[in-house]
Length: 380
Image: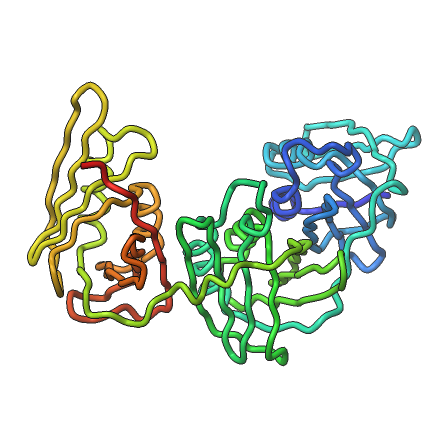
């Protein structure tokens, strides 16, 4: 095999396919990037670890078609530091790979292509979503997924197609994040539980305009989902299991809520929470015109701060996890935030707060983002 390719194009392609590879792979063969050069001037680069795959195709000058497998992260590191000149890659007589760029020369070990698993092919129904909306929705939801592998179904983001709407939902039992976006596809109903880590990378990679094609494929233990935009495709094996029915936890609209400047509340929470012991809740006291945050920690450290708020209904005092609240405030992406105080039929159970976007003091946000956060017990 022998080909010539633009350095920047090749470096970007290698960087894309290795992003989803785990830092430590129990099978060395899965650390490789598969490079296929065809006679029609196309260079395909792929990576696969049995759970997720990434594939992209770029143009190159192909002198001798062929297929090689080379260590992905090493190739990515080399490609990102090469001089500004075309890259030439050649298979040597001894089986190794020679990479030349300007005056730089590298000899890389070739990995056995025949031992590399077949990249998944997607043949199922697909639909389209706006790339920017999808990327935003992922950033608003994925952080709420659990990071504890003990309960695998909670480490994913549930994608649900219903008519012309695609919903993204995640929960770790203490909070729930939900966002709806437009869906354009022939499939009227579908669902897929996608690992949050993979979906986050998809959001970062495919966030720059256009549309993303989402396809559902496979069956049984090999159900997969594929995301395609331009010349790039990412597939992911779905998480098996039943996602909890968390939609029913969202309350009907209530008139008991507070509207606060997102930026002001964010900065105040960050400051006051500095004195808190780890995992301790922050006390919030909502009154007609303000919300006051109080915290006390070790070494008799204390902090208190108030910001303007517009409260509808009775005064409220409750405890919230400051980190969980800050993540929701970052996800709101609006100048103001509405914090709605829900009610519960169980008098012995704290009712969650509902966090949504707010365009102004008087006008609710236009997006469908919802974040449900369970309050913490406050020690008297």
